[in-house]
Image (cartoon, rainbow, N blue to C red; front, top):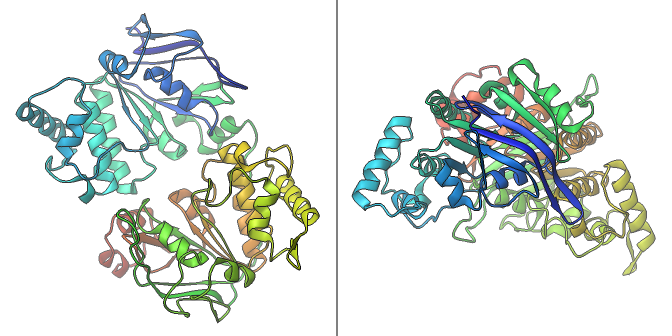
Amino acid sequence: MPYRLELTGITKRFPGVLANDNVSFAVKPGEIHALLGENGAGKSTLVKMIYGIMQPDAGEIRWDGQVVNIANPKDARRLGVGMVFQHFSLFEALTVFENIALGMDAKIPPRELEARIRAVMTKYGLLLDPHRTVATLSVGERQRIEIVRALLLDPKLLIMDEPTSVLTPQEVEALFVVLRLLAQQGCSILYISHKLHEIKALCDTATILRAGKLVDTCDPREETSRSMAEKMIGAGLRDIVRSEGRTMGLPKLVVSRLSTHKTGHFDVPVNDVSFSVRAGEIFGIAGVAGNGQNALLDALSGEIVSDDKDAVTLDGNPLGLLGTTKRRKRGLCAVPEERNGHAAVGDFTLSDNSVLTARDRLGMVIMGLLNSGAAKTYTGRVIADFAVKALGPASTAGSLSGGNLQKFIMGREILQKPSVLVVSQPTWGVDAGAAAAIHQALVDLAAAGSAIVVISQDLDELLALSDTLAVINMGQLSASRAVGDVSVEEIGLLMGGVHQSVEASDAVPA
């Protein structure tokens, strides 16, 4: 039997970048095949060529043994290639049925289409009311729409791009049931994910890319998550080192009944949030994206000012009525999720971006005059200590890759040695080696006596870093628990909005 999909010598160039360099691999019928690699490894470019969004500069694509030219996504779908993108393309004001109908290539009578939708939903356990408005659905339910839309085309190959990045653990298990059923029926699946434990649990084969080149094809069930990560980065992976006999100090950051106001149609405010973080403690906040994380960070950093001065205190001193500049002077630094335009200004140099947040804490402005030497020296230290690939402090932030800009932003805040550091998605878009270095820097900062709040969608990251964990859902924060006293299943239920039964139950060790 021929391969379902076979790539031979695929090469794609962009100005100054060789995105794919002579890449060859094949996917069998009914195989769940992982495509692994860090950001910038060439995965997205490769998938776009398979789906007809881009064309290769060299090499050939074979489909069921025949050479094909996939000119556009419609061509790909005609062959039998379906794709579920990481970022959903749904209209929130429309119904499930209307969104699916908009994504169909052929015009199908409404009654016939609804019957087909219900048949697919029943067959694969993807149950939804076709007449529900998308705005009323959870993230997991919205993903089902994308999957149903792809399955209506009866695909022979289904491409899944980071499909579990916004799902609870329970929703991940439900998705895996569907994917295994599809594979049993002969559908090939090309699965892209950075969650290596999922690759081990789900996939038959893994193709690993690094810097645009294929470096290995392996059986993930015979590998460890660590060995695959090391193949992806081409180096050994550092373990987090914690000092022995570490003790927590007194509460440093105390948040008491913090609430924000709704500011936009899609904004989720926080409601009556309370927690405390001790000196030396890393406090993790888990949650599916869009449940109030941005509002919480803005309220802690001072971008949103509270009505109550005691809603946020640092070492007993009220910060609730203070803005970002005054909170930074008192020792509270923050890193927002959005790095472009929020955490950094793309047209500014890295030195100027350092001045934006470190000017008061590190004496970069004296009597109203900028001390450019101090700014350049500090920026150079950030670049060196966090291995930022940049030409120097005079490089613009916009000239850096996403991962390198993230390393710069994290380094810029960590090296200020704040009393409290609040970070959202600290390792978003960085490779495994850089993520390990950032994790170690956060652990070292906590060991020096800082209180740290880490808001992340990556549950593995939180379980590895945190001493204490809580979950945010629809703007409400669960009770905090010691990481060793809570299971992944409990966290998943909290992420899905089940609070009372979980918090009332006895702790189940992870």
